[in-house]
Image (cartoon, rainbow, N blue to C red):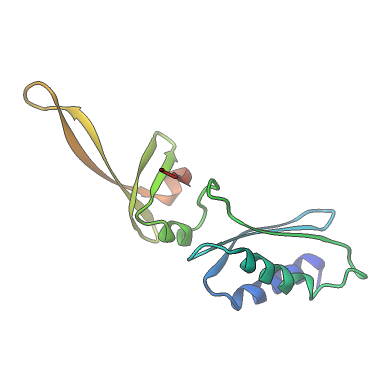
Length: 154
């Protein structure tokens, strides 16, 4: 078994012990720098990163293969990549960039095929002068999303 396969196996074993954590990205460079990016259904705590780091590091022999290991959580400004990330962010405001537009709206529903966003805007009245508030609701397929990021509102 190669080094990369061994790391992946150890990571999968470590994540199996913590079912609320999931892998966002695993990168192993040519110089054997292992970069693990995690997310969790209830967020990622420092102890979670330590536990996954130990699951990998304590089962590899630096005498056989020298390596560097970095385990971190997906940052708040990191784009969403997995359906599981969208599901945990229902009710939050997202900035979603598609091929044709950018929408900042509340994520109200998630399915395995698409997401549903809801937002209101002030638009001219259809009859008469002035503006009215219009509620928009749009389904966007994952394939149409170029980038989706959680927007932090204070």
